[in-house]
Image 1 (tube, rainbow, N blue to C red):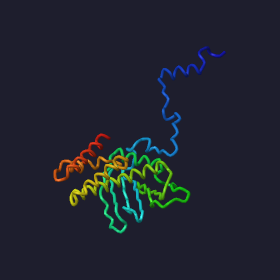
Image 2: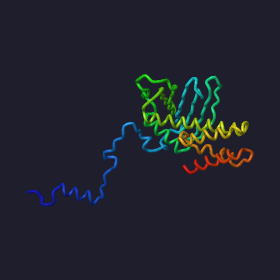
Image 3: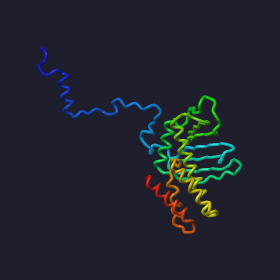
Image 4: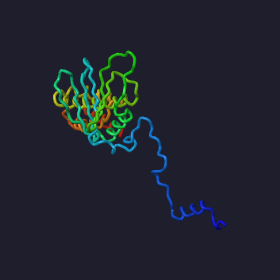
Amino acid sequence: MKPHGLPLVAVLSALATLAGTRVNAQQLPQPAMQPGISKSAVSGSSALPSSAAITYQKIFKGSTPEYIEITIHSDGSGSYDIRQLEDQANPQTLTVSQSLTTRIFQLATQLHDFGGLSLDVQRRIAYLGQKTLRYEAGGEKHEVTYNYTLNADATQLQQLFEGLGREEMDLQDLQRTMRYDRLGVADVLERIEEDLNTKTLAQPETLLPVLDELAADDRYMGIARQRARSISQSIRNAH
């Protein structure tokens, strides 16, 4: 005869309940990663290699400037070299905010760090300068070169680097005219204001110390000082 009692399945279920059995999270199916997004992009900037760097280079002979090269490291440090091709290389230090650094590396991640990537449009178009995006981390290095692209992520990345370059040129011009050509200060301020209104500048707060210095210095014309104050206030209000 079969022994009387509960079915074996019921007994095992009860024992599991009493023991407080929990499902191991590693045994559950994991959500699929979205195409084009790496784990580092999902986990945030803290997952970036400490030595990672992204470089944007543009060469356009006959323009002003003809050569732009900007490098941003994952810790926000960087350098820029903006000049005519015949001029000697003269890289300068550059510091980028954490939020902008994170955005730059996120866009690069969405572009697979430029590995095996083709950006150039496959049709005849006017020459707009040779642009190169380069990713380096340890022994890893990828780059892509293009004239013009319709890729939205690459376009945004290009605009951020161009904006960094533009504000450095504006800053240099303002410092130069303040020192050597006080009458030319107003023209530079007008260009800065236009760049600010068109949202060309990537981090306009970089200009604040020099603008504040100008606004407080009575050696400059009142109209220039007032404009400097107005631009400074606009930058602060935007943040």
